[in-house]
Length: 444
Image (cartoon, rainbow, N blue to C red):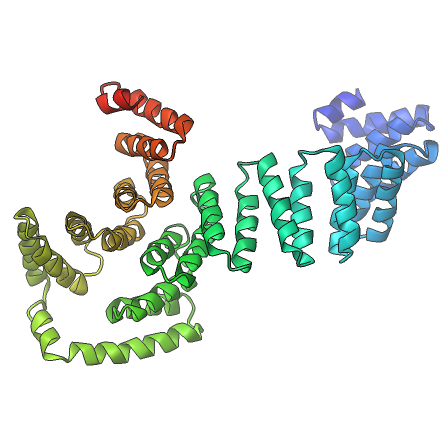
């Protein structure tokens, strides 16, 4: 009865039965072992240790009892005793990969890296698909500054568990540490495909673009961070820094100010804001800018200017419309329709990098709207940036699973990448949502 309750994780009910069994037959090691399991399940580590020690006293060659003893001693921070218990486990059962792994963790925590590597390799030898052991091996090599060995270990961890976003992230971080930005970029992108909300990966990806001086992609990726973590002051600061370098001082000031609102002690943002405010003041006092913006001084005139820009867009006068939309946004930065139509006009002129920047701002202004992410994906796709397009389309689908066009676009991109299995799944999803979608049948 006690054993059945334990299997059902009903530990409170199993406890009195084990205690009664021990009263009747006190020298049976298995009963003490399962009593230890029960105490462990109840969170009573001290009693679990006593039970495992009792099991060992009746059966000194009981490897599982030594293993569980080591686990619980480790929970109490008794690492020296825990090491002894795991070593005894491995003497009796060298194939116990869990014992090797846990022993490796303790060695790592104690700074005994070479010893950690030996037992982690032993864990892998007996269990070649032990993802956690490969991961810890990579972490240990990284601590020892054996970076190529660390990369190989992380790659093996990914091979054994390809859907683990965290392991991809650790590998990307190592590439970033080594300034291998191309490899880092590809790996961060994979993290985001596996987990679109992994904001740390978005931020680090943006930093890669920043260090490569690819400012358009850096901007859009920093804005993607803010979709998932709106209070990330460093992203606002980095956006401000890029705008400052591009001499877009008004936008730089807005982002430095946003960073300071989130963290009033952000010295770099404070210095940046002071610098661009001075530059902006000089810029706005020039006759050309006074003439450009003096007439847009109230809501009615902003609305009129927007209508004018809209008419210019409809007439195909995209260059003039772009100028007018920018004036609208100078006065009303959160004008959603102006953002959308500005991005559309930029795309019409083939200025997709600029369109991406505007669509990215839209994803920040309307983070729950799938359309902004879909259009962002379209713009990326036009530039041949298929990885970024995939991420944007996946985000659109995450927000609106019935977004037929996003599923279809996903299929098109996967086909370009020759990932035919994923393409087929995307097209099938299109047809599930709309059985009359002829292009999906054709592409299939």
